Length: 305
Length: 305
Image (cartoon, rainbow over all chains, first blue to last red; front, top):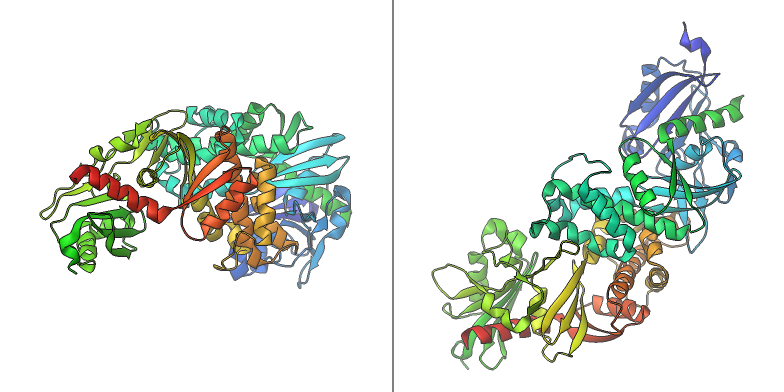
C-alpha cells in the first residue's frame, strides 16, 4: 500500500510547548503521526518551517499536500499571526478565517483563535476552538470543560461559541510546585490518582467553600510542618485544592448547567471527573487528542474539499 | 551621652529575607537600629552568629547584652529551632517559651511561632505573633490582618490568639509577575497607588464574586492582548484581583467582624485599606514596624526585667 497516494492533507496541533502532526487520508483515516516538543516557544528562535519540514519527512508526507495548523503557531509571537475571531462565533464558519503562510512548497494555513471582547471579561483561546469543532454531535446547548495549562470553560449553543472563561489551574499547579514555598511540600513527580486520600480530602475542602481553597493553599505546607501529611501527599493535596477550586468557581460562573462535556486526555481525566462530580455536575468524557484531530480534519475538509 | 550605659537589650526581627535589630534603652527608647538583607535564607549558608555580631558592631552595642529574636531564625531551617506554641495561646505567656541559643558571648533567645494543630485547617506563623504582642491596648475581641508574603488573619480575644488563617497573596503576586504567563502583562516595577483605575476596577471585580477573581487572573493578560489595558496597568490589575480576593475570602472566613486592625507598613497600607473597606470592613491601622519592636521589647522585658 502506498499511503502517499491516499494522503489528502496534513493537520497540525502546534501548541506552546508541543507539536503533533497527522497525515490524513481522504476518508479520515490517520496514515501517519509525528509528535515532538518543538512548540511555539522552541520555534520562536529555531524557526517554524524547518520543524514542520522535519515532521513531514518523518511521516513520509508528500511535500505539496495542503497543511492546516491550529494553536499558538498563529499567535503574535508565532509563525504568522492569525487574528482572533470574535465570540459569539459559529464554529462552522471558522475554517474560512484561516490565514495563509507564505512559503515555497505548499498551501499552509493557520486557524484563528477566538477572542471575547468584553472589557469586564476579556478572554482569548487558541487551539481549544478546534477541539470544540471536533466534538461532532452537538447538543442544543452545552457546557464544555477543557482542562490544561489554561483550562477553558465554554458555553456552546447550536454550534456557536457563546462565551468562555479561562482558569489558570495547570499553570498555578506548575508555579506552586516548582517556584513557591509549597515546593518544599512536594516530593518529586510521584503520580497519584483520583482516589488518593489527600486529593479527595482537598476536593472536599475546595467544594465546600471557595474562600477556603483560596486561603488554604498554605495548608499544604503547614500540614507537613505539623505532621498531618507527608511530602509524598503534597502534590495530590495541592492538585485537589486547585482543581476543586476551578470546579466550584466554574459551577458558580455557569449555574444553569447540570451536565458538562469534559474534553481531556491522560491522567487529568480522572482528576477532573472526580472534581466535577464533586460539585454536582454530570460528566461526559471526550478524548482531547481525538477531538483536535477531528476538528482539524473537518476544517481542512471545508477548505480544500 | 554614652548610649551603651543606658542600653538594656538588643531585639531582632529576623525574617526569611530581612534582618532588623534595635538597641533598646530600659525606658523603651530606641538607641540604635541596624537593618540588612541577611534573612534566614542568606544565613542558612553563611551562618547566623557572624551576621548578628556584625549588626551589633554596627550599632555599637555592648556584646554582653541579652538579645531577643523573633521570626524565621527560629524555624527548623533557622539558627536554633524554637518549637511552635499551640493555638489557642495567651500572648503574655509567650516569652516564657523562648529558646536559648548556645553561644560564647551573650544570653540569646529566640521566640517561638504559633501552630494551629487542626487537621482541617493546619496553620503556622513565625514573627507575626510578636507583632500581635505589640498591639498593646487590646479590644475584648478583634480581627487582625497582617499582610505580607503570607498574610495572616488572626482572631484575638482578651490577649489570646484564638485562630488564624494564611493567605499566600504576596507570594502569589511575586510568582505571577515573575514566573507566569502574566509576566508578559507587567511592565517592570512601576509603583501604583490605591487610586490607580486598574487597581480599583479589579477590587470591584474581586469583591463582587470570589469565583471571578480566581478565574479572571488570566484576564490580566487577555485585557492587553485585546487592547483594553496597557502593560503599565498589569501590576495594578493583578494586585487588585489578589488583594481583593484575600479581603473577600477573609470576610467570608470571619463573618462576625465589622472592624479589622490592619498591621502593615509602607505602600501596601493604602492598597489593603482600600480592599478591606471595599468588602465592608472598618479599618484601624497600626504600623507593623512599631508593632514588632514593641512586641519584642515587651517580651524582652518580661524575660529579663
